Amino acid sequence: MTYIQLLIQEIKREAESTIKLLERIPEDKFIWRPHAKSMSLIALAAHTAGLTEWPALIAKASELDLANHPKVVINHTQELVLIVIAGAKASEEALNTITENDLDREWTLRFGENIIKNLNKRDAIRTSALNHQIHHRGQLTVYLRLLNIPLPGLYGPSADEQ
Image (cartoon, rainbow, N blue to C red; front, side, top):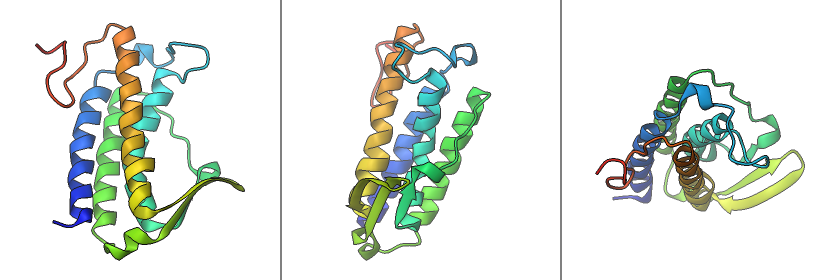
């Protein structure tokens, strides 16, 4: 199995877990935040959902400029799920159009003129997309726990599903 095939499998698996978590977000808590310096629940959820498309963005281009990256406005929980589904599909399709050698090409994450990081596409997909999404999904579990919302099992049963 190629590395690209392994990435596609992981994208699909992580999208399923992300959907299970995002479906739990109550719309009446969208603006809640655990601390003044924290993102709101909806901002964190939208960012987490949007990261599902990042493997596609990385595969198809040599850089991502966050200054030009569109901000998404979410009004309903189901919109988050649709973003994940579309992002996972786009990522799978994009990865199916590149070669293993393409993964060695350089990719840059920037905000305007400020370069945040330069990585090869292989590492960018792993760290800037997949690990990044998993990290924020973990933050979302804390938000939901603080709101007393039962958590789904993501890698096995949760304490709420036993």
